[in-house]
Image (cartoon, rainbow, N blue to C red):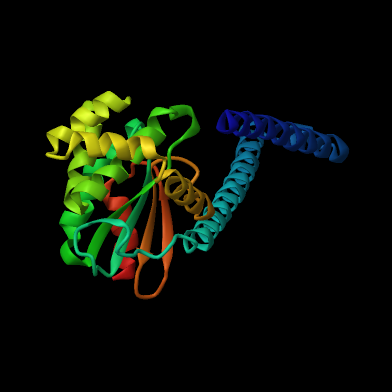
Length: 260
């Protein structure tokens, strides 16, 4: 809608400029008494040239404004992204724990874009090997509740009972089968080889509610406004950059290459 308004504004500006130029030329001809000498083709050429100059000027102004807006957004993104909590052994880490770069994903198991991004994040780690790892943090969206928070708790319970590898197995399966209640999640935990009773007890305990909210709050402080929101963090320098949405591998490569 905003682009449409800008297009209409540009058209009206062109029409206005054309009217002004035409009126000025006619007025000039009347004042000097040289109407007879102004050829129609010359007048048309002068009008066209004036309009072209005006359009070029407006396009350049629009491009400059857009460039400034992009630069401001990138600066703001970088300023907020550094608020992401440092990666520790308490995080869920896929890949080399000591990698120089971490892709920290703030995610929601109910989010279809997060499901799409899941394979992209794996491809980032595959592409960079030991240089990049992938960290999963929770960001359950309000309109996906109560399933989003319940699934987040389930992920933490799986990690408690089965360790880091089981957590990542859980992330694969949750996006495939998407159980949204206690019973379905307990069945999934059993498929992962975990004790169903212990898992169900953990799921009902509420012990991870604060952790999930803390991770979401840290995501907000880091500039995340939706899922997936990914902070690319240089673990050595603290440099960070936020990438919003299920962007392709190339979008991450552009940032990571500059950090390595």
